[in-house]
Length: 112
Image (cartoon, rainbow, N blue to C red; front, side, top):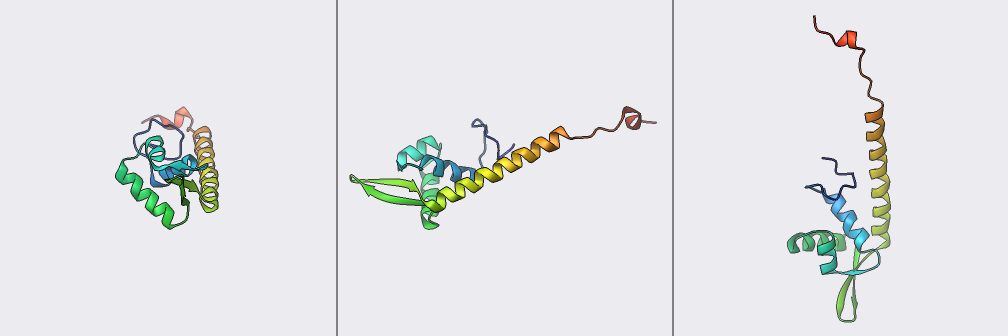
């Protein structure tokens, strides 16, 4: 199971991946319920992530027309950019490892 891939059907997502999803969703400002549904999080999970992300200033909460809007901060967008770069480096490294696997010649694999 690769936490850095882009397969949305995977069963388990790591915490950094979920944080990056929330930041991506909240780039332009969204309601809490939109984050919950688009990131496929329970209400409890969502509140935990939002609380943490607000505390470390990756997200900001803005009151607009009587509603709370969540938006990625500059710090959050910086995190997102760095996360994407690291994910790409890891993907490239995995591709290099898979493509450059050296298999010993058959005569060395024979059993005596």
